[in-house]
Amino acid sequence: MKTVIQRVSESSVCINNEVVAQIQQGLLVLIGIEDADNQEDINWLTSKIANLRIFADENDVMNLSLKDINGEMIIVSQFTLHAATKKGNRPSYIKASKPDVAIPLYESFVQQMEAELGKKIQTGQFGADMKVSLVNDGPVTIIIDTKNRE
Image (tube, rainbow, N blue to C red):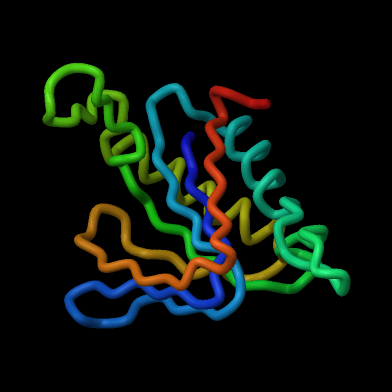
């Protein structure tokens, strides 16, 4: 699983000009799923994201997690995170899982994140044409790939 995590002061997702998700302070998480991903990846990644200390404490030091600040989250599926660009100019998405594999893993990821945070998580809609808006706070953007755990 690949994720792009953005600390936001606000974010929203629109589908067909209708707002389907909207948050204030928190995280926008874009997630790409490949066939090699499994529940172990989900468990590791949800814990890592929920506990990332990327919010400012009283001394303006990034020392607090989303849990610590009781922040909000939007999770958006994004198969293009698995774009292969080595050859030519047209990205290949061959590594991205097809919906029959990706949807159950995506739903499990959302459920596990809700369990980690103890609250409902807002989402986009898997496979939909979404318009994602955000105000990146910092800016803070972090990329995590479960196949490259550092």
